[in-house]
Structure formats: C-alpha cells, structure tokens
Image 1 (cartoon, rainbow, N blue to C red):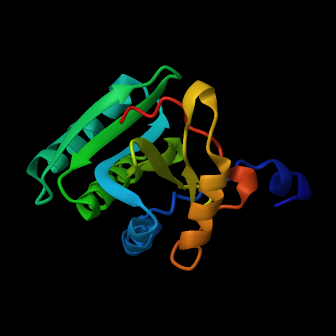
Image 2 (tube, one colour; image 1 turned 45 degrees about the vertical axis):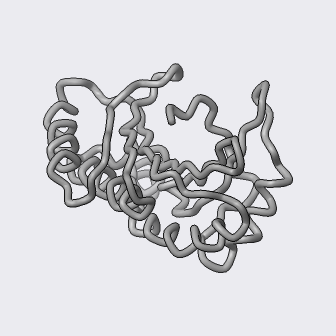
Length: 184
C-alpha cells in the first residue's frame, strides 16, 4: 500500500457506541434530586434513509417495539429539517432507555449506523422540557433546555452538567448543539 492509498482510501466509519445509553438511568436519580422528572419520552434521530432500503429495518423496529416486554407507544416520523425520528413513550423511564437502545441496535444491524445522529431523552423541569441528548459518534451526553424564541437556558444546562459529571460521559460545551423542534 502506498502513501496515497493510505491518505485517500475511504475509511470505514466506526459503528455508533450505543451501550453508554444505559448510563443515563443511574444519573437520572441525581437529576431527580435537582428537580428534573423523567417522562419516559425519548427518541432516536437519524438522517433520512431511502424508503426502499429502510422498510425492512423499520418493520423490525416496529415489530420489536410492539412485542417488547417494555410497554411503550412509538411512532416513526420526519421533522421539519428532513430527519427521521423513532419516538417512544414508555411507562417507565428506564424502559425508554431500553427501547431507544433496541431501536438503535436494529438501525446498526440493518447497516444504517452511520445515519444515526442522536438519541434524545425528555425530562421536565417544572412546566418546561429539559432534554438529555446522546451524541452517538462522540459517545457522550449533553443537556439542552430550550426557552422561547429559539433561546436556551445555558445556566441551567451548565448546572445540569455539573450534577451528572460523575455518572455520565458529558460532552464538552463546544459540542452542545441545540436540537430545535424535538417531536416530544
């Protein structure tokens, strides 16, 4: 192999790291003490896939979620930005994590791992949502607390980060991207 081959050969993308999703459950105990209530609402966001190639994987996801021991309501939708979401509403917050994990694993197994963008878990802070976002590529979480007019509560986000820094792999602030229009 020559130098040019090494420089320009396409690299195979690493599969997304989904096992860290389970670290959210123990961290949610500390978040509860901080005033966040887990809602059981969660979702997986991924770049839209050609319908022809995605149909069998979508059917598997629906079948697994329908027949899962973890009871949940789910939906597969597209958002205003063209991304596809598998949204899940579970009766127990830890079931939401397990269901997101299953949907993510099926996407990876179906060959669509490089399409997965993030997982989002909704908590409520009083009467407003506070999300924990898992970036699959960077294998880390970060908080997102939207306010009115596309603003965010950066102070609360930073305090939430400090609250869970022992339990969760938390992304550096440079990578805390807002996800506007979360469908739950």
